Amino acid sequence: MLATTHSKVDENGQRIWCDGHAKSVYEELRTTQNELQTTQAQLQSTQEELRTTSEELKATKKQLEDQRIGLLELNPRFGSFSALLGHPTTYTGTSQEST
Image (cartoon, rainbow, N blue to C red; front, side):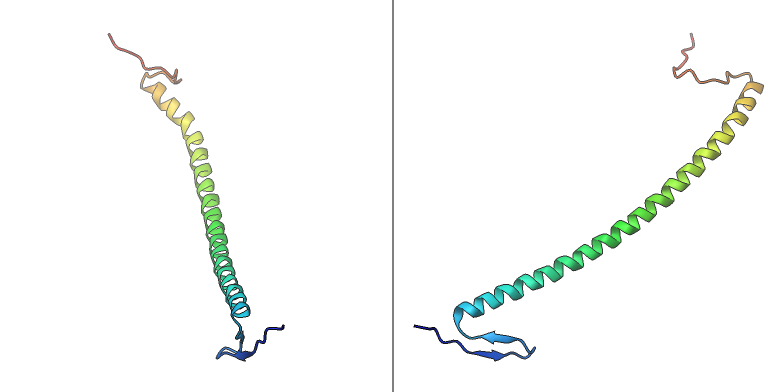
């Protein structure tokens, strides 16, 4: 025996099947499609955030490199100035204790 089904078109122009099984499959498909669209939107948002973060990291890296170069340029000057004051010009990595 064949099950009889009929359909109608909803206000959005989508066909709705009126037997229970077909309708539940259609609703599942619609739910899955909505979830996919939501996931795609979240993915696009995440991709944009990653692009922005990557650009910020590149800018920060450039700033740090510029600062490092500036410090390297200042280091010999500071050494000369420190020597004029009678301080050692090399760092030994240990603290000196006074007695």
